[in-house]
Image 1 (tube, rainbow, N blue to C red):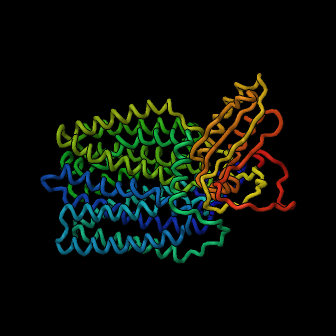
Image 2 (image 1 turned 90 degrees about the vertical axis):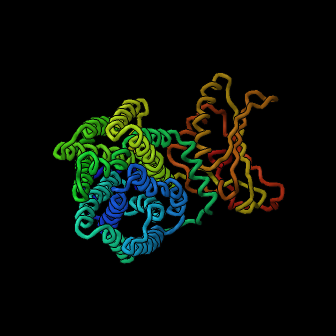
Image 3 (image 1 turned 60 degrees about the vertical axis):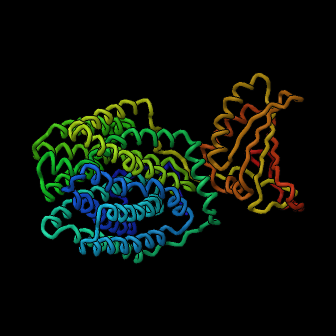
Length: 551
């Protein structure tokens, strides 16, 4: 379903180049409208109980209820995004969102919305976000060429942050004049707008391979993330920023009402200030990237966010709080868009939806976990102490991030490679037959052993992230110059997927580096379940050569 242009394509210097793709432009506009409704809904839900005696607990829990579904459902949603037509998946999510937002509007207008039910509905809204986000993020790579992915990711952040600025501002005005229920109604209409745009889009027919079954696909995505150190490093560095930085979103209603003495419209202004700073970052980040690497941008984002958050904690005037929130918005958007675009460029197409879903799990899962903790700290030690603590932790995370450098992904070739030859089998395994053990025999000269053993560690990671569940390397006791690599794959179909498109140029380079220390050609065997029936391979089906990776 995904296709990647050659990595050597030149980057388009224009930040608006993706808008030349008509489908991207219209869906992007639909996402802006839908996200305006979602941010307005969040503001309405938080403001509904801002004057409650337990506001310091309830208000952050709204953020948790909104984010927790993403933590729970994003990875399954990523599996669906990789396996099904993303357009129809997004249309179904929008239909669901319209129904949930309509029920929320009606019950709130009737005065039948206690805190527990509000949190339940907020959780339901978050479930829709969890299903929508991986499909949209992975769809971007279909709508624009590879050289425009970075610009498209930044424009996606622009859409999020334009919505973040406009949604709360609109919600603040609406709440001040007409109350909370109309804000929820706006969300229902906004979801319907995106659904209409998707229905109007005629997606080009694409060649789609056999769809992966849900549970094996879910496990394969988890194995890829677990065994790809670059992705793990990106996620860890992102979490170090998100856990303290999300305190602003969780505690902003309390900053507006308790610290600055503002009403609903003032709260909308503060929220809009965050969005304005974020939009400025998304539009201007291209200029910053000409002078700074991705790692430099992440350090700048963390330090600027920490300083602004510390000043916000001490401010008692709106004129000082507004520019500090703009700086916070800048740092927030710069961090998210940098990690998102680097991950988009790094990931191979077959697992992109699932790995981006894990990123969303980290992003919103951090908010789900940390938001109530910031609320608890506020209740125990006060709002100012909570914000200053968050500022210190954000600064510490930025400094620690220097040691967790994110590799630059620009120019990386992630096109699928099919450099393994078809195995010459005398048996006919069923696709679901398994587990399958692949055994590869290597002859290694004595003076090449250490280099071979070191290079095989990279081979191990390649096998595990592309589908293997276990990997071992043995020396043959009767012939010490012979080494035996064995890796276990859950089923024959899973091994065929390794042959058909899960490997990249990086995997091929890793194998070539290891095999440079091998004498002759590696000899491969496929060990199948004993119940596998025998068959005969015709001459036309015989591979050009034997051995892995050229099996």
